[in-house]
Image (cartoon, rainbow, N blue to C red; front, side, top):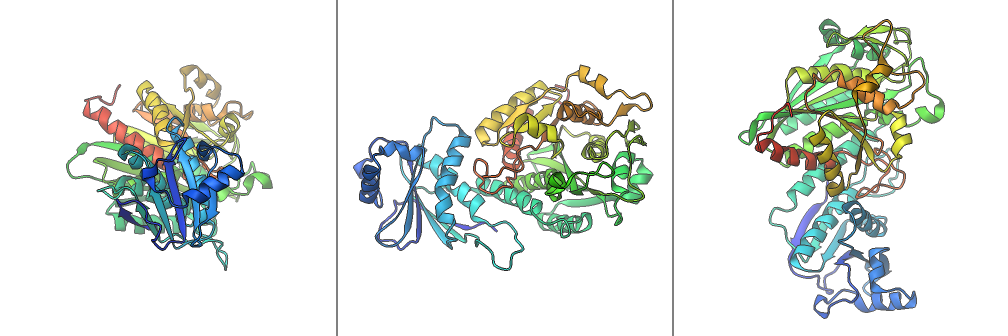
Length: 497
């Protein structure tokens, strides 16, 4: 649950009783007298003692206790910096305030009307994102969730509804990802999704293992059959709009491996720890759907979630097996720890059957993407140049940065098999992030398609706006991206561009 927002267009009054205050300024060399900044003399004294210029607040925020006992942080945002850097600056300024687990926090923004609009949006969004505490199972929680945010100096007539929708979607993705694997099983995950679908008025449909076998989804079944519980399924959620782009549909596809042992190619302990988060792609897809619904984006969305576990057992698939995917392609199994591309293959094929205008899939798919990029960016692959160009631009403007990788035709040679239509991967693992995307491309029927390999789903010290290790990366990027795609569709650009 996100904190309630109270807005006050007037400047902050020092006589107002508060406990925690964040003061957000544009980058300045001198504070104008008209600002009447709270704690201004104290700020000046501390800066003088440290021999720092006022503008240093854009590099590192400053915190102090005001005479009334309130904890105050001053920060400046440099408009010449990237959106990611501005988000990081605000998040670091909020951190000492939130560490005290306040019930309420006050935000005061200064500058021109345009500056205040921008600063207020940043501060409110980041307070929402970081004020809500993720699920924990400690008897005594380290922090409590923020209940109220009071904003001074600017009032948004819409209550920052789009930003709130993005924060809600991001929090859903992170909240699901941190749940322990004995709590979030394929069965309980599906139950949670079904409740959410009823609450949000989404159509809910699921294909269980029996149905998937009958349909010929052999790639998905191969992975799921190793689990003793047999509770895997592909879940389909449909959001339809009235008006808007009611003849246009975006398909979101998410990898939902609730725990990944690696199968017969068992992961060592250091790499298996944390594999309850291998369902993050499905959580991101679900978070995007929630954010788009709450923001009332005028476009239909089909959301396909591939939910399973990669377990060891008598029925588990193995190297050298040959399976037949839903689109009829035969696949030679090379490595059982490359299961994500198999469950996505059949799920993408299902999504493509509905003939959407665009397919976007999300997955914590390959370790080689983390090797290539680290955990600050995520990798993107696409079969359309205009999608690639927009993906990078949206990464810069949203603060969730992405890097484009190739899926050129000549990479296909590496996946040629002597006994099947295609290999699942290479045993050597060279350029596996690229080959995984090339593999997935066979299942989208040459429709406009974008694949995001979520190397930035975890970052130890937080990333951009988000202060937790689990970042929810992809939700905010996707909402910005969908808004841009809507503009492109409105210009009459068809499916075959």
